[in-house]
Image (cartoon, rainbow, N blue to C red; front, side, top):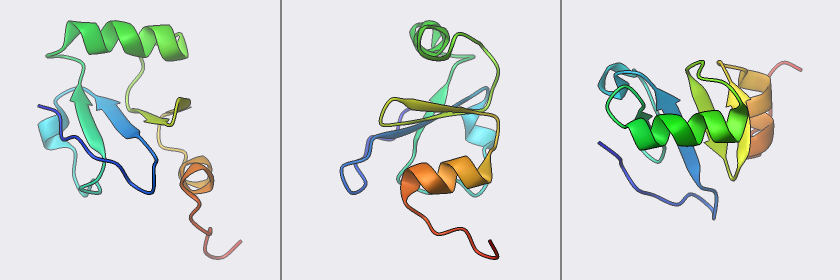
Length: 82
């Protein structure tokens, strides 16, 4: 269920339901299916205060939903066209 990794010393986890259906995810993300892992679901609520998915945890910084600008910022990716 989980794919372990490190990327330039960043620990990145994508929390979702049915993570196997997540498309085009970078292979270095750790995919966490909270519908199958109650402990991970509880950890997500503890970290973010909510159960909404998807959520991405980048070195302890939580991004709720898909906020490309914030994700790119946390990952050190330059935003094209800005």
